[in-house]
Length: 172
Image (cartoon, rainbow, N blue to C red):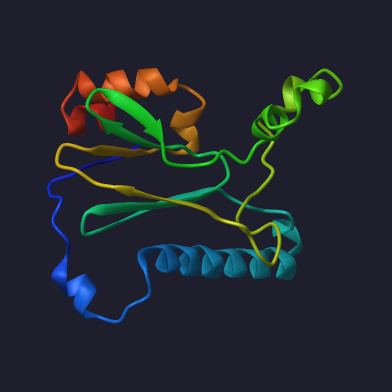
């Protein structure tokens, strides 16, 4: 778990002065590059065939938070005692929930609910979901790893953060 606390809602003049790719483009380029390297390695080495991973990334620029994800590792925004998703889960369960009500009973999620529908490295290209949201003083962002996301509910993550200082929350 990584926690980042917002400190400012002022724009970053150095970021604006340079003609750099947008924060979303930077995130997308980085994840695509990682995907290509992982995929190439899995194709080249028989022992690594089919390997893949999840990614949850955050880029803070000026008064905005930019998140990108592939897989099911959550990114949460804690603001004013509330918790909000800044990611899209790429699982069979999430896909199942998007089915029209008339089809739900025909395709029960069962034990396959947490099977990933997207992962970095599985194919030569990967679709990445992104979110841009304003950042305010006092905001806290929690990036979860696989070790945390299946163990605690959103509400338990929120409570852990608000009931402890940031370092203690990370250790717990």
